[in-house]
Length: 404
Image (tube, rainbow, N blue to C red; front, side, top):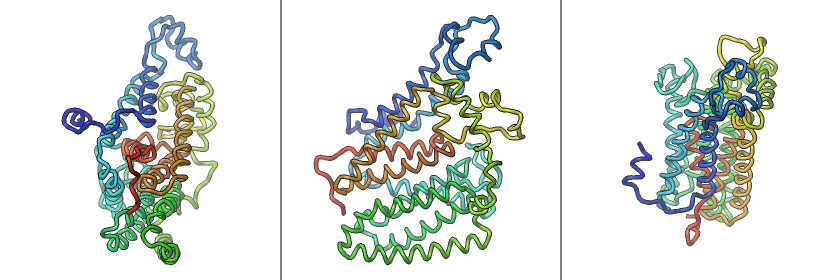
């Protein structure tokens, strides 16, 4: 609906070219659609990993798509509506609107955090749009790791929000400090072990990215003030976090201390998933079909009452789903991120460059989280990724905007 409204009544795009972000989105969509093209039975049956299904099909010579679970691949293709819509709307923003985006994203993080606080207090929050686990603190997400990643992006954005604008920065100090404390406590309460690492990285990245603003505002006094402020902040945060742990409110720490690596389902299933990816390589098994395919390959030793919905290593699952083409697209995307990040950190720190650095940091958080989970498959993280990627792509104005 938002995409239709944007096409009918919104201002035209300020840039006509797709840009690298648009090209990657189009390539991802085409990759899913190609998997739905019916193939002659002799061609389909000769694809790697299809022998089991050929036996089940018997003498049937029906044309079949490359995707083994085409319904799931159709759903995966339709999920691309979310990033395409965000990409379309972002391309229509005025330069001044780009300055408001960090605050908007931070407000969305705050809303999800508020839901997490309600869940933590025992009030309960039944979200009809997600398959959530009872008594889990996950905000607007079904997965606590995705929730913790979303909070980590808020930790990266908060230091920049405090000093991004010259007006009102005095009241932003205490508000931003309180937000940082709440985000850290909520990550600890969520029970996400990876979230603790991502939260620390996000806060560190936010401080580094926002440093040019501090330096431009305070000059030579900036380093001293930042040093004193950072020392006080770290001391305060350490005290708050220690109190949370002592009060048995830090589920993430408790789960990390009780972790048995050999019993973690991610570790136990990794060899099976890797063998599956090798079985269906180089054409892949089709996007979205991991659950039924894993049940076929699942050994008896991994059987349990609940099902293993994802590989919990999205980079490996991407190769399993899309084969060599998906691997190439992934490497191209990572290479573009690395090149654009190098350019953003090398350039003079204008407002556009600082925002590009923030986009680079957020994409890095998502990439690291994808090694042990699948956050990029959730609509909200999809939207955040597109915004961060467009920041990193940063359309240059005629005159670079100086820091306020």
